[in-house]
Length: 321
Image (cartoon, rainbow, N blue to C red):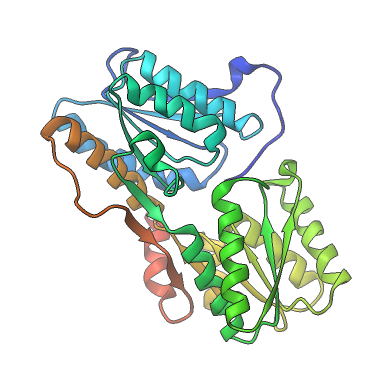
């Protein structure tokens, strides 16, 4: 997830990207900021699943917040709007339970079927979610921490771009625990939310910590764009060969660094699958009464490093990884 500067009015808090008219929607898929490139990969999965939905007489309304400045209330508003428009099902991550869970409970009480994806695995039973499609955030963090420590890291900086977001805090907790089991320490750097998506500000914040504590020999970020910022701060100190870099999620630049050996790894949660499975399985349940027996359905974590980076690159070229 990423955050941008606040806009003036609540009326600009969200956008709807859909060809469906109000009242015609069978499914609403609600995600994060329209300014966050991560959701493009999720949307590709949603769009591909929508072909099946449309072939069977349904529609998909893809809904996004404009930014992350008023995130919890904006998500609750989108949930309420989806219900008001007649959505029979809602697929949504649950990052902020204090805002989202009450709105999802209210939707469920009105007969709306809920599917969780990307975030909210631990919360989904509170509103009767049909299933969860996504990564186990804690396990992903544990694997990342263990990976860095097993490759020689002694002190790891874990950067959180949105303090308080359940999935991000859980990731760094996992990194901390995984690293500890492998004999390494972890320092969690929580920066102000207004630095999210701010490359220069984030790079400077990470660089300041690296200068203040020369014992930090590894950095892990929770988004691909933040890995770019961290790579810049490491490079500015000419420590590319001394400080390991890992990240959650992937991009062309992340995979290029892994190929060149200037980044150690990335953790893939397969966002395309999250969007595809959440959309197709929600509609299939509504239309055909089908459901997957496995709950939750985990799409990650998967470690991408120099041993398997070539196959990941092809997926990124197609906009799905």
